[in-house]
Image 1 (cartoon, rainbow, N blue to C red):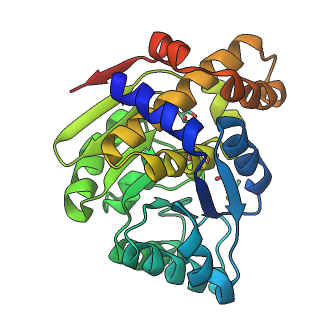
Image 2: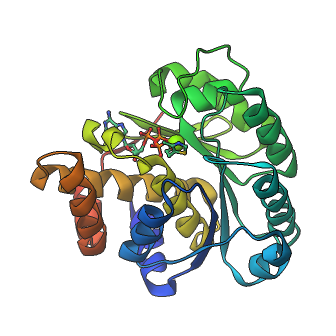
Image 3: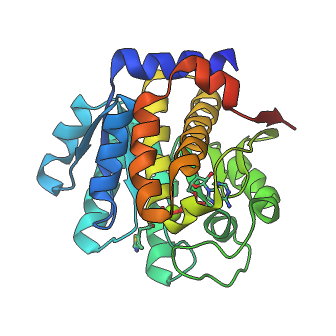
Length: 263
Ligand SMILES: Nc1ncnc2c1ncn2[C@@H]1O[C@H](COP(=O)(O)OP(=O)(O)OP(=O)(O)O)[C@@H](O)[C@H]1O
Ligand SMILES: Cc1ncsc1CCO
Ligand SMILES: [Mg+2]
């Protein structure tokens, strides 16, 4: 828990610049969440500026939610540059398994070597080649069902794998952490998962131990979700209260409220 709160303090102190190549649906939510956390967002996807942009950021988050051929070129270029500069590269495999184009793109991105992969259970199962019935961007599986797939994916890629859902799992090879915070209403706000991936990027920017960084990011997400749900009347106000909770959260409150276990 001390490692988690230390990582949280470092995000606040350093305010890392996080680049997201993300989808049209969530750009605004994601940028606001990073600001509320105390990090600094930049959304950028022009092919001509990818190498220059990656040179000045502290972490890259690639989210394939509304991918197209032009964007994919930029995603691949940015990911390669981040790897060459040893900067954290977080992959959010939105809609993995929904179409062959998404799967081909994800294969290319995974070959470059993401540092962290954060997805919902169905997405992680699809990446680990479990034959699932994909329902687009929403999960049709539980995190528990995806745990073995997550371990396999981490072993195959060397990446930290995070499976989000009712329970969040963070996996690095055989090491498994579990976060039990959060509220079911979070799945009724579009892009909460994309926000989680961006926050993972902010933590990876300041914390070299990427397992700890991912645990801390998901604990912050979950605790902010819990606090927001206490005040919300539905998904609309949940989203607003979520930003406020992120903004107001302090390390002591995080330590008190986070429900973290190791398997
Ligand atoms: N039933 C639940 N109980 C508690 N927390 C939840 C629940 N469902 C989702 N969450 C939390 O919501 C956040 C987003 O996770 P989710 O698995 O819904 O992502 P996602 O499916 O990728 O979302 P999106 O594609 O809309 O961005 C995580 O922090 C997760 O812990
Ligand atoms: C709804 C939706 N469609 C493509 S990306 C996205 C945001 C949640 O993943
Ligand atoms: Mg998602």
